[in-house]
Image (cartoon, rainbow, N blue to C red; front, side, top):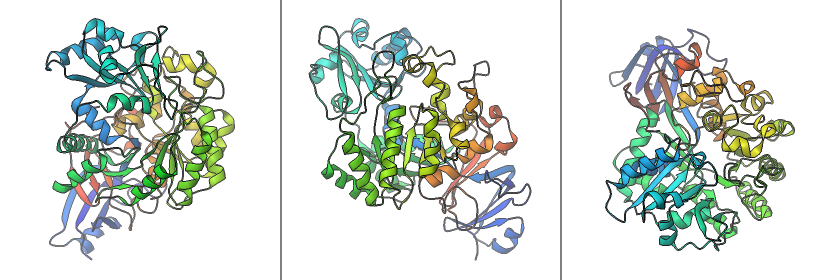
Length: 543
C-alpha cells in the first residue's frame, strides 16, 4: 500500500503513556486514515511516486485538538456583522464603540452587538442609557454569557414589548417599578422576540463569515468543534461552504431541545440525526436545564443574595426527564447545560434513571459550581463533564468583586469550575471554549487551565488555584476526552493505525513548554480527514 501523505517531525505525542520519547516521528495517511506510525522505515515502505511528504523539523505531531463546546454559526455571524463589546470595561467605553458604528450607518439601521459585560452597568442592566446617548437608535446588545440582551427603548417600541409577555420556559422581559420594560431581556424565548427582528443575512454572506472564522480557528490548532446548537441557518451554511470547498474543521452538531417542548418537537429533532455533510454531522441533542448565574436564572439549591438563581429554565422538569428518556431510548446522547448545583444534581439523577445511549455518553455542560457529593457521580454514571477553563479565569475576579461571585457567595465560588477535583474523582473532563462567548484559541484555554488565571496576565491572582491541572491533562481534555464525549474514541483523539487522520502539528511539544510558551506555540499545520492545511504565524482568530 502506498500512502497519500507522509508526515515527518521530531516526535509524536498522544498525551498519554503510549508514546515513548524518540520512538516514533513519522506517520502515513491513506484515504483519510492513519495506516502506519513509526520511524523512517515508513518512507522506505509506503512512499510512492504520488505520495506527498511533509517535513516538519523539530516539530511535534499530536492528535487534532477539538473544542468540546462552541457555537460556530451564530458566533461567526455575530462577529461578521455585530459589534464586539468585549474590550469595554465601562459604560462609557461601550457607548464609545456604539457611537463609532452608529456614525457609519444609515438612519434607522440596527446596531447589534455581543460580548457585553453586564458589570458595566454597576447595577441592574437597563437600555435607558442608550436612549440618553443615542436618541431613537435601534440598539440590541447580547450579554457576554449569550443568555440575555440589553436593548434600547426604540427596540422595545419597534418589537412592541409590553412586559406582559409569557413564555414556555423561565424567560422574561424584565420590567421596572413602573411596570414597563427596562430593556433587559433574559433567556432564549424572550430573546427570540428581538432576534427575529434582526436584519436578514443572505446565506452566502453567512457562509463567508463562518468559513473565515473556522479557518482562523484551524490556525490555532483546532481540527474539530462540538457545535452545541443547530439553529437556522446552520444546515444551509454548512452545505453552502461544502458546495464550493471544504470545511477546515470537523463539526459535530447537537440541536437544542427547547424548554418545555413536547413529543412532536422531539421527533423532529430526532429525525435531524440523519443530517450530515462531508465534515459536519448532527449527532446528539442539547438541553438547557437552567440559565446563568449572572442573570439570576441558574438553578441552585439555595437562592443567591437577591433571592434568585433557584429555578430551572424548564418549568416542568418532568418534561425534561421524559425528553432525555425519549432520546436515550433512540440511542441519541444528550448534552445538558447545567450551571447551578441543583441543575447538575437533577441532570445526574435523570441520567441515572434512563441509562446510557448506544451512540455515546451523556454530557453535562458548564458545571460552574458543585458540592463535594456530586464529584464521584460523573465517573460512576459515565457522564462526561464538559468545562470551559476561560470562563473561570476570564469572567470572574479573584477578589470576588464580579457579578457572578457576588451573587452566589464565597462558599459556592470556592467550588467553581472544579476541573482538578473532577479528574481526581475519575471523571472524563472534556474542555472547550463556548466560543464566541469564550476565547476560541485552544492554546490560551489550555494554558489558563494550568494556571487558573489569564495566561496573558502574569500579575493576576489565580482563581481557585487548587483546581490547576497539568499540561498532559489539559491537552488530553481536547483530544482523548473530546473523542470519548463524541462516542468516537476508536476513531479520533489518538495517533495510531486505523484512526482518522485529524492531527495538529506544533512547532514544539507542548509538554516541554511552560503554559506561557504553550499559548504562543506556533501551529505549523492541521490535518483533517487526511488533508494537510499549512498555517502561517500571523493567522489568529477574531475572538
